[in-house]
Length: 322
Image 1 (cartoon, rainbow, N blue to C red):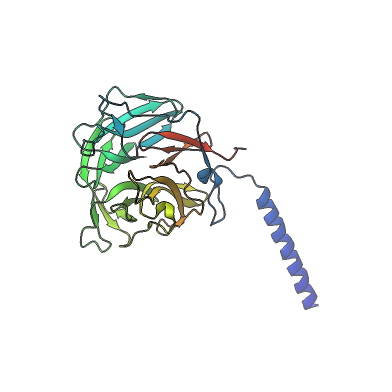
Image 2: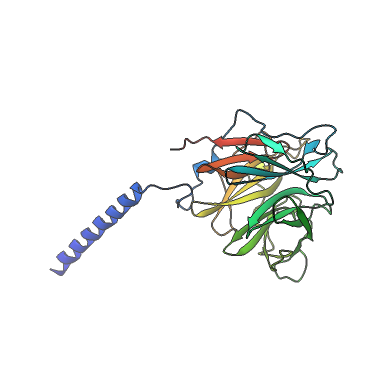
């Protein structure tokens, strides 16, 4: 009798489990809902260029932004778009200035009459965090392209806060300089800084003070390295972190063209569950053809990808939105 009762209990448990699985299978999921641990969301890896590319170009000869340099940043809010970008005279030694443009659709842009916004310091390869009613800009400065911080209340008037002090994991010495291409992510109240050293890897640090001037490495070794694929075998730098379907995804650019001049770059993606251990997408690069400094922006329930160097191109999902 006990054996029969145990068998019946087992059959009932299997029935309940099958019902639960069937229920989960039919529950509709919204944008960036939970997914299986090892998946790369289709909306982040399959892209096609928009017909109107490029959507933003340098102003050209005779202007302060003769050329556009490296990563810019786009924020969307209240059905409008704000873009910050780096303009310069086209020479390697030319001062890198901060430019600003706005758009209603993210495709047609109007330069600010106040450009360049910040004339007193070198601002290059920047990203912007909007947090607590303020804007925080992390960028490369003129001293070996080491990371710097600017702050603003409106995104137009910027205050120079100075260079970041990045420490080793034990806090007893400075990390290797320069700490370039700063990419900041806030998670549960903690500010994280991803940075590259001469494009030879990406390191991770945490802020140790409320002014965001001092950071300490999480570990001494990089969290993301070049290779082993040919597409990013020589150099890499992280551009953005987004949270989607229960995981973190890093947009980064890479290069494997060490013998080519000028060097060519591509846009790639990696996945992590702890910000330290990253898995590169097997289908990288997600955008090639020398399109780099890529970031994604939420648009109407999905994402749009922008590559920023040395012109701004836009890409839409190659997966149909249901």
